Length: 204
Image (cartoon, helix red, strand yellow):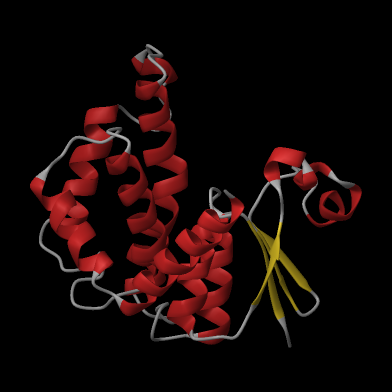
């Protein structure tokens, strides 16, 4: 089976390189030039009708959305190591936090960053403060969301925390900074950062 990632370094596909390096599977990158709108061309729309990145093709399987890609890769190539087994109670915590990033952190932080005043009755993701407090509780004791066990949930959650801290869209809490430092020390994260930076530099 061959894995192809439709990628641009300034998209969420950058995180998928990190995922692939963590699972240790060989992969090919297919560059998609966002500025030319290649993500909206018919070939890619057949893979993802949303016309967005990332898109992962793994044999006959097509997977989109970062959390879904992370779950697919961990379950397929690193079960037990990067994803708890289906009958492991830790699986519940893992699922909660791998989905917390796209379903809670992103909408809460984007709403605040855009200056949208979200009334309590409309805030299905909770408030910005409750989101941050929940995140702090999850990573404060560390080192990872499953305690001593690093998982794909840390890649998805960690990539989101890194991105929003970089742009000042999360408060600079010490537990966030410590978590990011631990993530940055992982060889797979370093390889992914270097590869994404190299590709970005080549694009000018």
